[in-house]
Structure formats: C-alpha cells, structure tokens
Image (cartoon, rainbow, N blue to C red; front, side):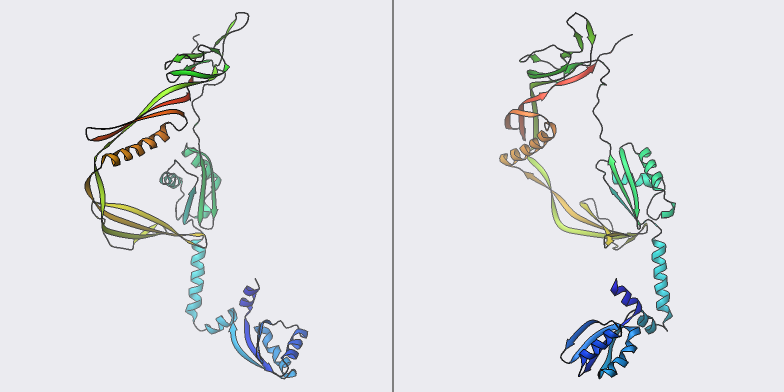
Length: 391
C-alpha cells in the first residue's frame, strides 16, 4: 500500500555527500521529513524521499555542509509531466480503461461444475435457451430466476447455484440420484427369488417363510409370504421384508479373433489452430480438414490471467494419419487379451456380488480365442412383488 501511495505522489532518489552525513540525517528527522531506502556506499549516502519534500532538504544540507545530487525521479507526476505534450498516450490510456470497463459489464466465460452424466453441451444449450450465453449483459441476468428455470428445464438436476464473479458465470450443480423402484411400506407384498440357487442364510423381518436353509429354489419362487397367521388363526396381509442369501451360478464368456486389424500411425500429423473470442472464431492456420484416414485429437485451453478467465479460448486440433494392418495374434497373446476383457466384464457385472469359486475354461475355436468363466456366488436373491388386492 505504501508503494502505491509513493507512486501516485511521486518520489525521488538522491545522493548526499559531505563530512557529516549523520548530522544531515538528524536534521531531516527533526524536521519531520521521511527518508527511505537509505544505503551508504563509502562516503556517499543514497536516499529516497517524497518529491514534495525534496526542496526542504536543500536548506538542511547547507546547515550540515552536505551536497545533494538528484539521481532519479519516479511516480505518476513525473510520468504525466514527461508525456504532457503527447496527448495520444493519455487518450489511449482513457480508451483502454473505458474498453476494460465496458467489457466488464458482460459475461465472457461460463464455468460448469458438478456434472457427471449430464453433458456440458446440453447444459450450455439449456442456458442459451433461457438467454444466458457468452456476451450477455450482466445487469440483465437474474441468478435466482436462472436457477429456477434450469431446475424446471432439466429433470436430472437436484440442486443448482449460479454465481457471477467478474466476467465469469459459475454454474455449480448436483445431479439427481435415481432411487430404486421400491414398494411403499403401506402396500402388501411377497418376497420372491430373482435367481435360482441353494438357500444358505435368511434374514426375515416381516412375513411367513416358505423355504428353509439348504432348500433349492428356482427363479420366481415364493420365499416369504405376505399373508401372516397369528396365534389365534387370524390371517392378515403384510408388507413382507427379508434378505435371502443363496449360492447361485453365473457364467461369462468372451471371444477374440486371432486375426486382428490394428491402426498403425504413419507419423504424418496435421495441426489446425483457431482462437475464439467474444463469441467469434478466428482461424490461426489455413490448413483444411484432412481425409478419412486421419483421427482427430482436440485440445481446448481457456486463457486465464492470475486465475481470472478471459473471454479467449484456444483450440488446437491434432490430426494423426493411420493405416490399417492385419495382425495375427499367437495363442498366448489372444488368450491374455480375452482374459483382460473377461476381467473387465466381471468387475462390471459382478461388482456387488461375493464370488465363492471361479472355474475358467480356455480354448481356440474357429479361429477365435474363447474364454468362459463359471462362477459360484453368494448373493441376496430376495425381490419384492406387490400383492394386488381386488375390490
């Protein structure tokens, strides 16, 4: 802050030489004149003071037999004096400041956070439909109304917050988590099996069990009845609830051709660049889009200055040329790749299921590597089914 004040008021750098520089320093202190950046090199004293106080130092220098010599002038008053006759400089500064002010009245960057399944282009399209885009006047934006309109327009949003900082509009949202289809507690239901297997454990919270541990069941079989009979023989219909764990069998299979077609890069690369600013796109290269044997890799960089997003976006397209090449895999290579595919599917399909045992069978059949895995699993096979009551 002190440096800013000194810049606006102007300050000078000078040297003081003489037999008694200490006496000069004492006199300036008594006179209330502030010296700063004081350094001594041999018999020469280097000091800085405010421009308005430098004249008063000359009288003090005579009293202390000290000779002052002005070295440098800094600050806004000296800058203005230097360029006083050059009106174009000041007109340019004013125009530059006015341009910055006018640009600050608009939104030049939209930052979206929190979206996982909803595509950003879809959100940009929704915002454009309600009148929010790059180049929109900030005074015309009603953030609470934008939030309500986004919530009404997109069913996948559970919460949204819109904030404007500088020329950046930040959109932060939370997506809805779709709940599983549940039968309300007040409606009666039975518990049936979702898969066939052998019962190993039961946790019954409500209802009448129709099976026992060790029983074999098939898909769709009644496990827990919603009709409950009390000690007096009176029957009532309840909302059956239970967890029924069974040993089940599952199987996954993957096939991979021994003869594969791979894309091999030729080493030829085409680069296309363009700059987008204030909603307009300007090509930086005049290279046309290459043929179909090229694949594009897009790089998008938003230009920032000290963490502030500027209304400039830099696009770089890297087009790499490929050619197709037939490759025959060995038995070991094909089996290894087929196993990798099987493991990926296993992680997706059986991620919430406890695997007790796995039996893997590998073979080459009709020019393909075939990998089949049979699993013995432990899982909860209970699924609720509503009891429909007829009037």
